[in-house]
Amino acid sequence: MTGFARTQGQKAGISWTWEVRSVNGRGLDIRFRLPAGLSQMEEGLRKQVRSRFKRGNMQISLQLDHDQEAESAVSVNIDLVRQIVEEFTPLIEQGLVRRPSVDGLIAVKNVLQGKSHCFDEDELSPSLLSSFTELLDQLALARANEGRELAKSLVQILDKIEILIEQCRNNPALRPEAILENLHKQIKVLNESIAPERLAQEAALLAIKADINEELERLQGHVSAARGLLGISGPTGRKLEFLSQELGREVNTLCAKSNNSQLTGAGLELKTLIDQIKEQAANVE
Image (cartoon, rainbow, N blue to C red; front, side, top):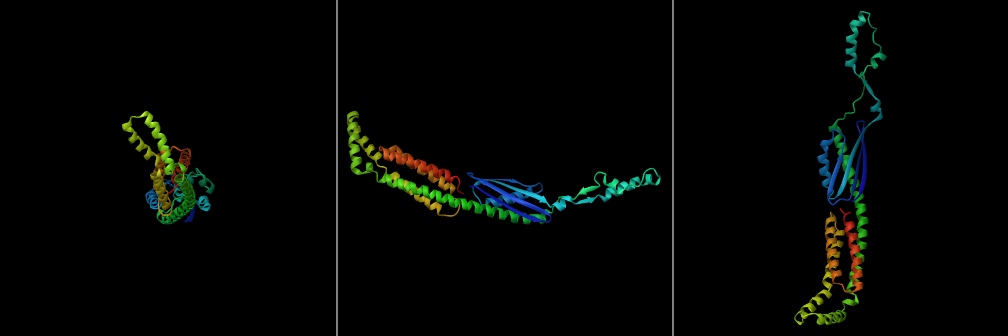
């Protein structure tokens, strides 16, 4: 399922932004992009994601930023300045060089240093983890909202399938008298082109082929099972995909048995609707 979430926080002069992007996937694929020094957090974060989601390709990133005030702050390398002065003191006493000025010392490399952007991991980690949990909460909410819309779409498709199933049941070609008449016509043809000893066998096969009630019952059963899945909590995507395969199998059999244009047309419409279920099921958790 698709989804996007972002959370932000700040502590001890450091601000952060968590982002997660989720797209459809048959399984759960998690990829992290963490700042250097925080890679050891990844395994714990990964377990947290797996405990809440079962499907989707997720890209999760963390960006750390330091306050501008901290960025501009500098410190003086006192040890280096002392070393420079001590080294030049004999020359200064001999009058060979002048005593160094502040401007001159500042120009020396590494005398002025920006404050280190290091952070206390133990101090920061709890806040990052809390913010990460909030991130997953937001993602779960986004995916749940999408899931509700998908459920409505799937219910509409199942409604259409049930209408077509009922149309097939009520098709005039499936009335006993129509089946009998069609059988008589086909037996007459067979009687002219087949050995008498096989005529009864072929007639029985024709009678079996003319009956699609079993396929219609199984189709209805799969539709009812799909409705049941849409009404429960927890992962159902793979089960819906399996049911769409079973629905497709029954419709293929129905089309193979059909000797009526209306039944064939209904079968083709059913195939289109089942393909839509299969496509939508790939988006379901």
